Image (cartoon, rainbow, N blue to C red):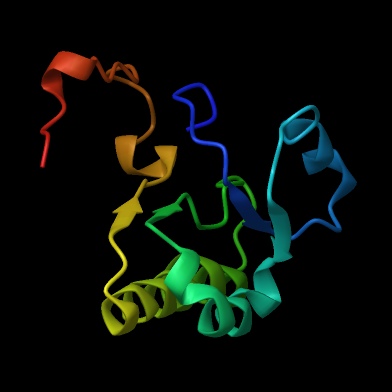
Length: 117
């Protein structure tokens, strides 16, 4: 998004995890919103939101805690969908790499094979 010229970006995450901080280093963001208060933030700011690009989910697929999986990979994504429907905000949902399987066939995802909607 940043490489394509979007300048009014709000990042939403659990910013308490210091190992994630380099991911946003040097990025110009309008705001950083903690994941646990995002829906309250959205209720107050929905008119300024053009779309949501949801990368959400627990990305560490080697650690499995069903309660965390259910909260982050299922319920949070459901709440995100419901909020987007409620406010009429377009939603782009990017699935995690876990959907590709164990890698036995590789992880190739050429742009030509992507379906545009």
